[in-house]
Image 1 (cartoon, rainbow, N blue to C red):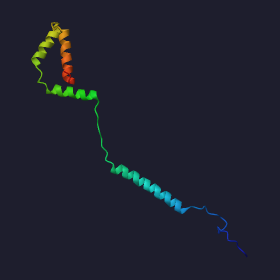
Image 2: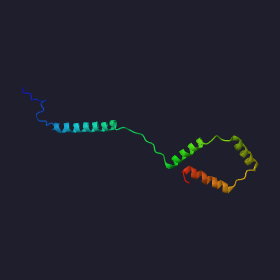
Image 3: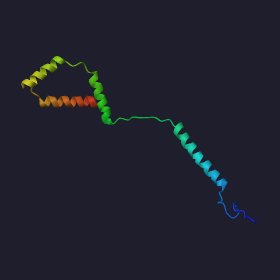
Image 4: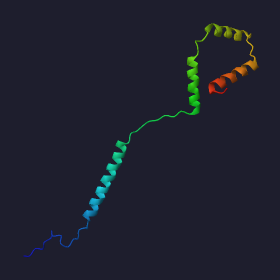
Amino acid sequence: MSVNNVNSNNNVQKPHVDNQKLQQQQNQTAAQANTQQAKQSSAPRGDSVSLTQSAQQLSQIQKKGSDTASVNQEKVDRLKKAIQAGDYKVNPEKLAENIAKFESELFGIK
């Protein structure tokens, strides 16, 4: 009795894989991953903050406010009573002059 070799794969063609190209692609992928990782780990990360001009001006105002002499509570109480009683009168020219003076000092304008 003759038995054919059924398990033989002699007639089946295997797909051809170019091992050299596959190895090159793997090496290239690994090199790219190493380069990316090196960039991320070696580059120092520095956080930075920049303030807008308005924020800088506000900071100057706060510094000037904290540098001034303590509040004269007696004067504040007198003014509160005068305002509540309706006796406090505002001089618009003097108010405008004082505002202009404050702004020129604040922004360094002479």
